[in-house]
Image (cartoon, rainbow, N blue to C red; front, side, top):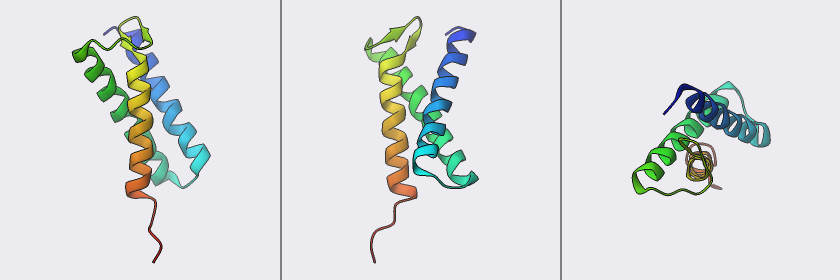
Length: 88
């Protein structure tokens, strides 16, 4: 992994988390939650795709397709677990 690919991946993960926060709203705590989930999902997806040699939308050393998909899954799942409250 090169430094430019790490910066690009971090930027994409940050944009995904911030975009989700823009869409769903919330305070600073939710922004940090969404950013953390987006980063964790992005790098987990990248590493998993690297180990499995899954090359959907690969961009240099960055396994972008799987990383973005895992990031979105992590943010949506985290929102569902931490934010959504069942009707009482």
